[in-house]
Image 1 (tube, one colour):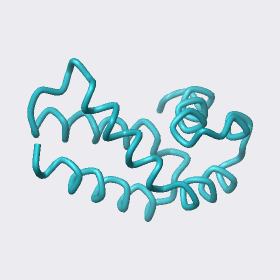
Image 2: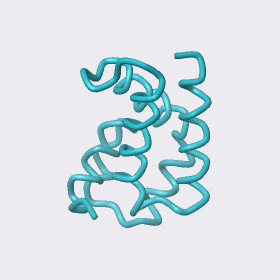
Image 3: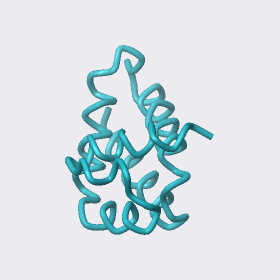
Length: 93
């Protein structure tokens, strides 16, 4: 499990909400629901510029690792929806 401060820092950056650095899980989950598409776009953007991503399979692996990294502060429903949405986002890669 990644250290919680690192997870919160990543979510704060992706959701442009510095308050998330000190938030509890419930507040993080609300923020993810409110800014879900910002999170999706941010993660897809990271994959697009990553040196580790050069095709669809590597994009999927990269994004799966990002969901796993962030997953401990998300609900199961959020993890599933995020994963499914990201995988649909790379279908055309």
